[in-house]
Length: 387
Image (tube, rainbow, N blue to C red):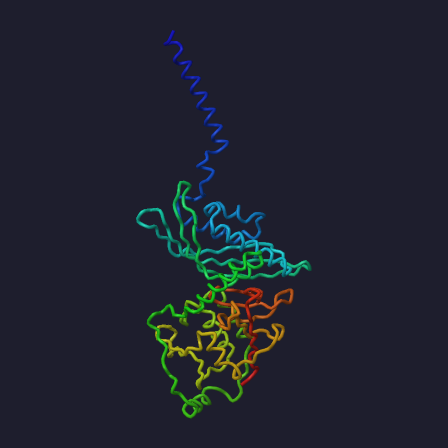
């Protein structure tokens, strides 16, 4: 009898096991449900997070869209969800109805610590947004950001726990989302701290001291270089700004806070005469295309010094953004404390007639000009027509 019942018991156990596996397959195990797609590859998780971050503004619940890549309930997840809500509200307030969002990623470095529990990923992300207005006009804008991500490995795989990036839109988006004013102020203060780091990325480049130059020695040389009347080429300044808004001209030195360096390049492309009499403003390529032996004055990459060098000689300040156009400049004091931290190039208007800018550090292409918060102050600089 026992020998006859054994096959029957095995058959019954097999049927029960098979049914259990089918049920588990249909429901999914708890671990499989919580796991991150590509969870064993920190680079794949970083890519998924950055792509989700880009398109979260179109999600009904940004926190859910980001939840696959960040720790549930994490500070990072809450902040990114707030930024997404703020971006969606900002588009609506401006009359922009988002059609599509595209994210281009360059994962530059992926490293895992020796213990295998922490990873760091550096990446450059360009997010391009296409929108239309109620009247049907269509426009495109884009922003590029450098990200330094920290990931931790857990039972469900890798998750992003920190995202360091210098996003000049963050304070405005947080304020638009109704974030705590302390958090908004902290984001603006972080931009000010980042603006002070103006070291060039080429360590061998040093700034010369040419403060002894005077008009008697400089003006004769200038007359040989420049015609008697120089006209500002606004179209050329805009064309240069658009060309290098999301990239960098490799023939120039790149700075960690690059906004003013970029603005100076745009002005030079528009044939704004360089200034060789104090306060000076010039950049010398030393006759080569390589930036390794370039020289420049402090006013070339510094907003406050550029403003001092240009005021009354290259620009005049106007009271309203409506009074500036292609090739003009907007200066930003993020916290309203009197320190001018950022500059952007006005490149005209979008299809709704709103002034738009190109800029660097956070790379912007045709983005609505009003960055910052209710505490931010602005100066609108109109470039002279001729000199």
